[in-house]
Each structure stands twice: as structure tokens, then as C-alpha cells.
Image (tube, rainbow, N blue to C red; front, side):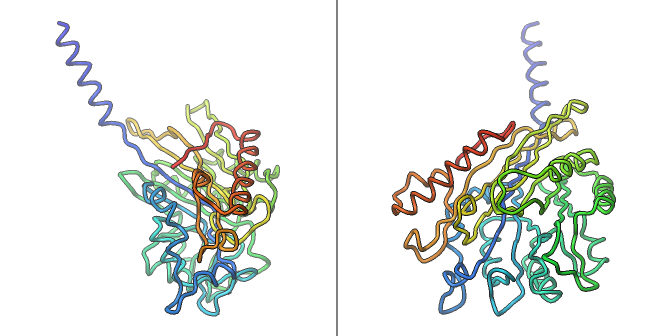
Length: 357
């Protein structure tokens, strides 16, 4: 009798294991190219960004789906940084090589090179078969490609992307930009739900630059998005980190992650709070056809500039790189960013902890 009982327990255990499926999603902040970054990447034959992501490439590639905000256009020459960004194509090659699977294009700089810049950016993304969300060459392309449905490991991930504005510029017909508009977003969320996804994630380019706490408007909009059926909300734009919180949904026994700002992923910004950012990792589990957020965590990253490191190019350092031999000023700036970020998160984060890789 005992042997039969053990066999039944083992069978039940194996069935449970086979019914559980998991996927890991990774989100990063703003991918930027200021003038000094473009100069640092210049070579006799073009541009080389291979050093920029070498310390984080393995972690990005380890995720099943990695997403970041492309805060530049690929508008062609002349290449320029702020205030009207146009990055070399090699920057996009390096982004893909680093392991990113999806890029967000709805941000305040997507029209920096006008209609041609928007179209060329999309052309380059398509040429590398990099899915994107946020800007479109025309309404037909938007209806065909949005909401963006990413299918991986048997999971269906619906991604939405919107921006608060485009620096006073308007898209020239027939091109389109996804702006934050509740009526349009409500329609898009319904369209996403009809795709029968496992999860819907809204990526919002919002907030006030350089403020470390979200405004009331962003908090209310995040709640509204969740009420409409969005599962998780990931924010960008302020160029500094803002808090993250896990919201419990007792009605359906679920959890929703809201990240108000992931800060700068890579940039030339050097003021306090602007020289780094975070990657946030979501681990989803599907059991008996129901997908839930099993675990989430964040990892801090910091951009080392040649003026600090003495190296040829900009390099992204994960948090534990602080233990490596560094130049004095490099160590000081890196430590300052880590201390400030952890202090902010210790005071304001809810339900999410730091991880290291």
C-alpha cells in the first residue's frame, strides 16, 4: 500500500513539473548616444561599440526576451548627439549583439531627424530583424505590427509602448508615433487581450526629467493601465532611477510590477543620479494555463566614461564590478551612484530586491 501511495505521489509530482513553464524577461533603460560617445567609438573604418556592453552581454543574452528603450534615431549622417540624436548604424549592431531582442521607439527623441529619420530607423530595425514597438511608417504597418506580440518558449508576450511627447515635433503623414492617450490606449489594450497573451506589458516614456520620485500623474496612470488589463508597467524618460513596486491583486491572486523609471542604460550623462540605471528581471511561471509573476528583481549598472577610466570607449559596469581595480575618480563616481540608488530603493521600493550577476 505504501509503495502504491509513493508511486501516486511521484506521478502527481511529475505531472506538476511538466505543467509548469517559465520565461525570463529583462528590461533596460535608455540607450543613448551623445557626441562624446560617437567620437569615442570612431575608428579608421567606421565605429566600434564592442566594448560598451561586454560586461553585461552575458546577462542580457541569458534572458529569454530582453527589451530596451532606443533613445536615438538611426537617421544616417551626419551623426550627432544631443539635442537631435542620430547614431551610427554600428550602435544598433552592438545592441543586437549584446542580446537585446526588442527595442522601444516611442520616446521624445524619435522624431529628431524628422520623417526620414523615423523611416530609416525602422528600416534598420527591420534589416536586423529586431522587433520594435512605438513608431510606424503608416497606419497599415501599425495595425499589422501593433500591439507587438513576442512569442518565445511557448509564451505569448504582448508589448505596448507610448511616449508623453516628441519635443514639440509632430509626425509627418503617413508616419505614426504612439502618444499617451487613454482612448487610444484602451483600444490597444483590448486588441492585446484579443491576442490571448500570457502577459501584457506597457512600456511608458513618461515623467519629469531628473526627478527621483514619480509624479502623481504617473502613479495614477499606472493604476489605470492595470485596471484596463495591463499586467506590468515599465517606465523610462527621467534619465534617473525611480522606485519600483509590486502591487498585489487580491481579486485574482496576482502581482503587478510597476517600474517608474529605469534611468540611463548607457549615455554620456555625468551629473549625480544620471550616470547609471538598472535592469529589471521578471520571472513568469505558467501553471495549468495561468501565468503569474513568480519573481522579480533588479540589477544596477553604471556607465564608465573614458575621461574617468582612461580606456578608449564607454563601458557598462554591473554593480559588483566595483570590486575590480578602478581609477580613483572612477571608483568614487561609481560608488556614489550605487550608494544613492540603493538609498532611494531602500526607502521607496516595495516587493523587489537587488540581484547580482
